[in-house]
Image 1 (tube, rainbow, N blue to C red):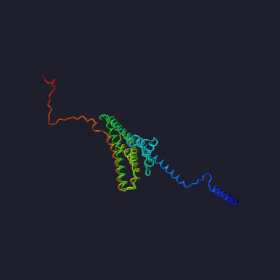
Image 2 (image 1 turned 120 degrees about the vertical axis):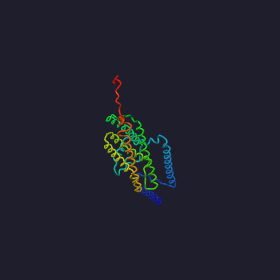
Image 3 (image 1 turned 45 degrees about the vertical axis):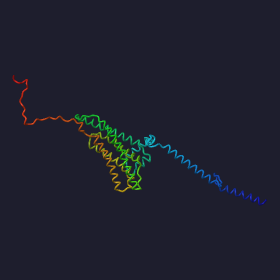
Image 4 (image 1 turned 90 degrees about the horizontal axis):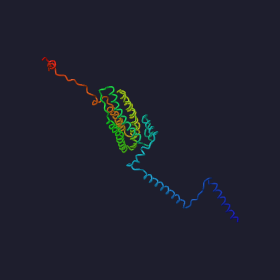
Length: 303
């Protein structure tokens, strides 16, 4: 009896001690030989759920040939577009346009409408320039030049797509040579160039002022802001390359931008196109060795 009482007391003490060691609010679970199999089953179930979710996402992602694929690139609100336009108008060193404004979410809405607006404004202001010139000089015969809309649209859209494509391809090629380089994606490069063209829209409107030196001044200011934004954005990528390659690449980028601005100025804002100016009346003079016959009119001739 004594030994049985001692054994019972010993079991009670062990139980109370285990209760004291167990924190409050927690449940002590005894894991036997089958506990490891239960944990493995839970891990396998979670992995199966993750694989199933990934497969569903891949099935839901549309192909690049569908309209739904490109619809995501136009899913942007007005505040984001205005913020990106503001960032392109106020470039400053150390302020990366991609990192501070795109934030891994490039869009095609802003670049598309910026290019469309610039092409339309170029064509309209180019015709208005001739109308104002005709009012100052009546000898100029103005006729609507609708072909300028086509020329402006093709020029702007080709520049905004082909130049970023060439730049992106070159940076991808240099990435294989310099492993430290991490180029932007193609859509990010298109977005950079598209928003950099916004500053040319007010510049084109100001070109209606018929003062040549003032027009070139506005063009230089707009070109400086736009080119500075491109250089500050591309510099973090090209600085990992050699100094020669980085210098030549940025120089080509600025040169192409300058050619675009000068081409718009010289083609759409010609002061007096030769084909639209009426030629002055020409007076033909007879040679001096030909004597005029002193003939009188028949009505005055003597009978």
